[in-house]
Length: 306
Image (cartoon, rainbow, N blue to C red; front, side, top):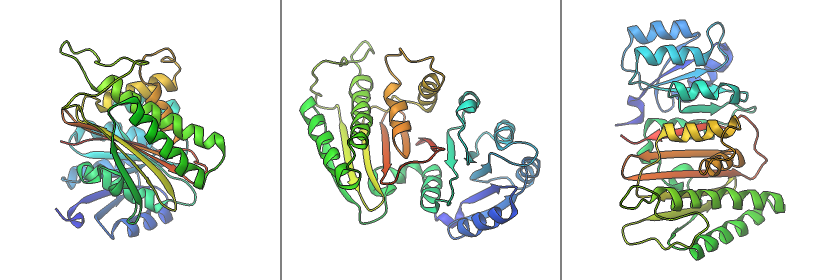
């Protein structure tokens, strides 16, 4: 289906910003606008079939979060994304409770590349799998399979070498190494299950994936990002599980949890973390590390391939 057939409702109280975002979005989508949560609810009731609602968090009157919570009750099949210019950790429990899996970071100056990529991923997550879809054309991409600890070590070494070309500080290199190692370990030790349903491989132990157990990884870089992606062929990690793990780390309730730390570290140490799950088939997590220091708020991007 062509992009221009997709309908987006933009809910933004700031007249100037609403106009700027509308003009940008209209290059690819059909765009409708509302200036408040109440106006948006009325618009949706009179104009059904909207594919995505983009709502500014700091709307006048009803907040964007309260609007999305209310709208999801009446329009459960519609996709929603919040846009926020500030951290939202204190509201994460509400995002989880109401299955709100998308928050677009609204930084100054506005990042149109990240904005358009996030929207494209929400609308068609299958087409956005892999680093080639998340990074602009011309990015150098390396792909490999991971079956053993030696494969993991070789991939992390390659990532570290790339990182030193852009951000040579050892602190930056160590953070990238940690985030990527944690994601690989999460996939190895939690994605693959034995016959009794328990994890097949144990943290801290040697592993050698068996035939049929697939763990692929990609490394890429361009003039803006270093990218890392890991994908398993199990599809066991659901969006609610991701949200619960992140929330437990945000609230410090999960400091002693056996899992969840890796996801949280990956989310906080990268500029963008994109989680895509096709239940029973695949889980992919993409990390993008900016060459410039990241600035909050970090986006939230968790997707289900139907």
